Length: 388
Image (cartoon, rainbow, N blue to C red; front, side):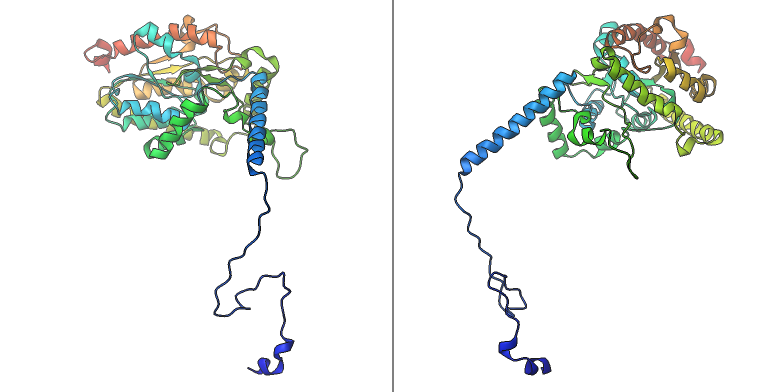
């Protein structure tokens, strides 16, 4: 009240005409809707120009990656994994299923397995991921009553590392929008565009550039593109560029080598921690195998080939006597180790961890009968099964 008397009406602050009135200037009155004239523009031509620019840039991006060696192919997405996992609950629970990491994903070719055995298995391996989470998931699913081939890549299986572990929860939580999104991607984008790969995403490309060093900036050394999926049921093989491009092959090897020379992860930074972690993974496998066996599921472990510095690293950190041999003894499960079979040796592994596409076919043809023999020995009523 005092301020109103002291300050006359003519002395109040007046806003310039170009400043919009606020609620305090118009007490009790609704704010007017601002209006701004939009000058006439050739909107049709602007829209066509923007569309033409978009198509030009997309074509240029596609051309760039095709020149780099990429080809259209199916994405190894969570949706693709869930689509195959769903088959078990939709009437195919009695089939042979493959689980594990990228070695069984790359090195086992489904057409060759089908030719050798008469059955095309369900491929549920996930790159960079221990087989243990998938093993437990299948053990908890009463619909699965078939046969199981488990890839044991030592550094992954016995550490429990699960780079793609979210694929399992994605399957159990997948909603209609996610399923329809995968359906559209699989039919409208993946078969036609080479650039449609996570490794070629613009943000990923920018992140891995050789930026000047500065605090907080770490060099991007994540694994580059190594695979190609050429069918809708996740049949996969190594990318041809890894085989024929010496520079790219050296890059892939150098990324693996950083794991060999860098500090171990915190959960394995001492021998005692590493031992306890390995025991934990083996115990998880023991429980899952017992549940599967009680349901009549037959299981075979497979140790695929590795070579060079990768093999030497595995021999040092996860020696066979403390990992593979213990796993087979504790679970009472048969295993096929590539070192024990001449027909599983002598293949080319360009970056020490995965077979060439041609050798993957030969390897599958050699492996499938061995797996079938172990399954046959474990048939209920057989002498091996009775001994167990």
